[in-house]
Image 1 (cartoon, rainbow, N blue to C red):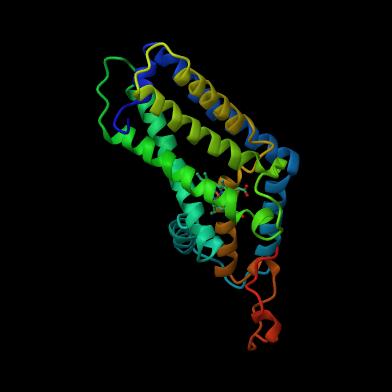
Image 2 (cartoon, rainbow, N blue to C red):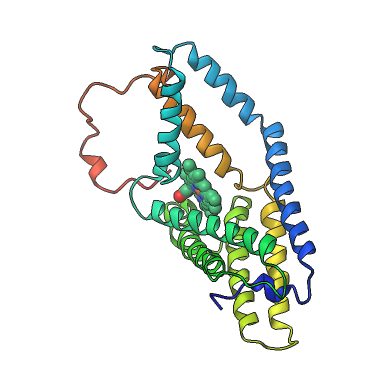
Length: 266
Ligand code: HEM
């Protein structure tokens, strides 16, 4: 299973062009959903106005070289390692999900655009990347869903309580779980039975919800977060600090109470 390209097997019944069109439509849905989100929430407008305002209190003008260095450092550290999540399980779970999803998507695009025909000989690397990516997403995502979600971890809500904000993580989990199950059932060679067809349908449906739901879900955080991290580090480097006060030059005194319980209430 892990070395078989499921899209090549699928091409016996679904033409490659249909799969490729589906991927393009999904990408367009992400662009449209993000743009509508930006227009509706005005978050990017606010972001740039705020950055312009902060620039006025900059203590130093950064050269292009210095700005580039800040951007590269931010991408290599803050974004690539999601440093915002601090040390611990929350970050490990996110990294598993994030890199798993990237592998899963890259594997899907390569296999659908380069090897989606019955005659194509897919190098084993791509199905392995696809399956490993899906497994990593499932592990990181379910770990987050059952144990780390703020509602469950800090607010003592049961894991099965679902709210609109869960649309992204649930659609992401559904997509990788149904994708894996479909590939597994396909590898069993069940002939013309319904099983793999059902899971293929669920796989398609979960992708439509995931990519079509960008406007309503947290999907776009994967674009906003890197932008915000770059702005924060540029504001740090030019001394404007987004108009926030500098850290206090005094010992941290929070009293003994702070030691009673690790901070986990948001
Ligand atoms: C392919 C890229 C990414 C994927 C698939 C992904 C996936 C996820 C998922 C599933 C969640 C949980 C959402 C929820 O609260 O229901 C999440 C939360 C989060 N993501 Fe991402 N993410 C990606 C990129 C990024 C990037 C680039 C950053 C930061 C630079 C980032 C920072 C965060 C933060 C801070 C949270 C909140 C985590 C928490 O509440 O524990 N993500 N992400």
